[in-house]
Figure 1 (cartoon, rainbow, N blue to C red):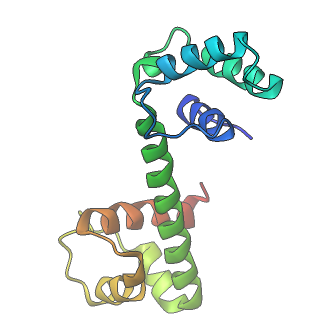
Figure 2: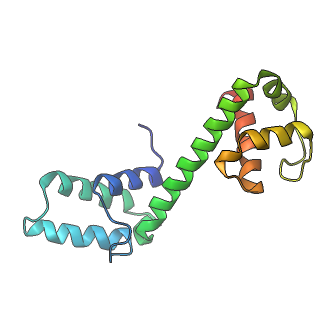
Length: 150
């Protein structure tokens, strides 16, 4: 899988089952403490390898000083965003006329637009629990994906 640096660090933390509420606040502190534990044999070799990968990933970056919770929160937000976008695309695919309208609709902003078709879309994706901002961002992203496939 092709990860950006933050996603890669999250995947290592997740593979290592790092508790974001543990006393070690920063990634670097957690990794150093875990490597010290490994010297006494209390850490399985597979985990030692992952910890070393983590240390390499944070070397020469500011990420080592980041709170571990940062990576878990970013991942959670990205997962919610992907889910909301997938749901909006599903809803639009189930409503072809609305989809065609949506693809051609280019308001100055989605957040303060009171177009009836946009109101219908809002109701159809209500289960995603959007704020005005998240709905607007979702609309922009989904339209981009529908129009250009990326």
